[in-house]
Length: 398
Image 1 (cartoon, rainbow, N blue to C red):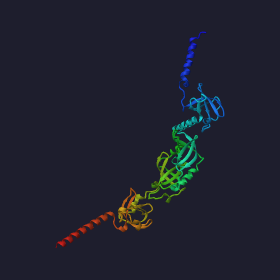
Image 2 (tube, helix red, strand yellow):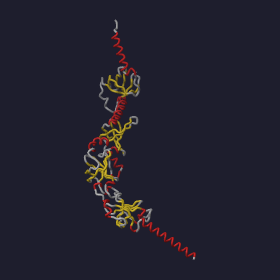
Image 3 (cartoon, helix red, strand yellow):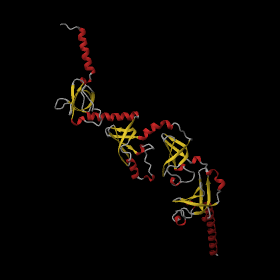
Image 4 (cartoon, rainbow, N blue to C red):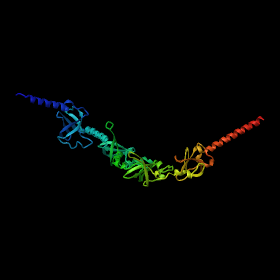
């Protein structure tokens, strides 16, 4: 029988395609590679896969198990992936693993979540003082305290670490919507953020506000550095201690407590961070300070605080001044607490007023003179002493 040229050409073309397109004939897999195969059979203790029709792979023992249920419902004819563990086992087959394949696939998926900013679910499994231990797609990860949204951030008065941990422990078994911040399969490192997910959900709300807007809110936390105010639709802003009032404040708790209501003005928006000011809505008492006080006046003031550099003094509710150590008899302040007590009313002399900078300088009135007057007096005293010395030396010559 004669084979026609057309038939020969068809056979050659089919063979070329087979060898050129099927990578299984040109490159064998290596250990660690993920290969795709078709399920041949499923037994209780093993699964056989057909790899490109040229080799058979077997998954058995512990390699059948995986964190996810991805491989639980396989049936003959299904396509699936597995990791190459051994290229030639004692049965002459490729030894494969669902466990490693699932592990690799999971980390690849987590990396994709990070790159695409996908919001995923994280289940809290435990907590420590630094944050929450979570599980995402069966992988253990960490959610730092700093990456919790205002709703879940543990603001504990005084910053008691044990109470913070107690608050974090209360989240165990809860599920949070998070974004992946950092993922490294080699180090098995996974860091997630609940705050980033919250910011995504609140994005449209942030766009409704701008600097200068006035908001009504309720205080959710009082700290050493200021108060947190909730306003609008679950948004939160910080009023720093310097923006609470025009006068000096040592402890915000002296003015506010949780659940107090107040009005504030937005002074800065930095991403999801909103900064507020309550003193902006109060007339600046320093604007007319020159009408109330004059340099040289002797006034009564209450000592609020004694520091290494002087005394903080309250002249009235809004105007506070500083009696600097340079205006003290004892410049080292070594004995000041023996003569001055916090809360004591004393007479002070105003030595300087800087309204724009909100500064007013004082000297204890009992000392009698301000610094410039002291310098003049010291100069006069030295001149008199010098004159007396000359007179005495003249009399000795006689």
